[in-house]
Length: 163
Image (cartoon, rainbow, N blue to C red; front, side, top):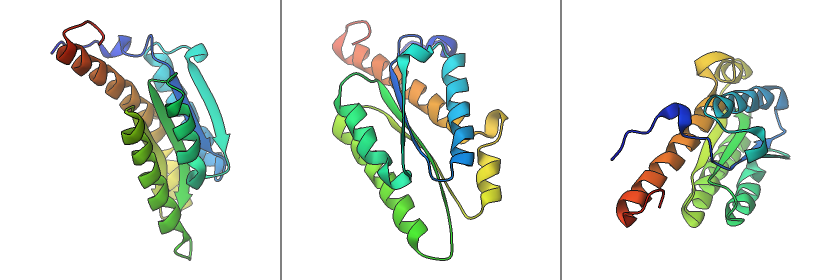
């Protein structure tokens, strides 16, 4: 397989971003990180659709709608679930992760998990910070790489450029 230039991976990709408003002061930083990664890889704002949902539990439903539309190459899910004193964290985080994986497998497109699941606000802020540690940036990079890799595999399997 060819080695693709990472700086050119995203130039023609259509990406949907779904973000949870709960803990928005953290999620806003994840969104900025994702936008930075996409911009660095040639994805213009015109090729990005952004939607907000109440929280992480609602991410899979909207991700599924974007994926089912056939318009997007990948969906990036961003959110923050912070452990509290009840088992609520386990249910929300687990169901969110399972739901997003199901969307990816059901629709055959990358759905990346940029949902922080931390014990403390401090841990969440650290993972949403600026620089390379921003998990929104990481989720966008994963989406871009997966789309590029899937295109390359499809091209290899079909013998046609770009699938």
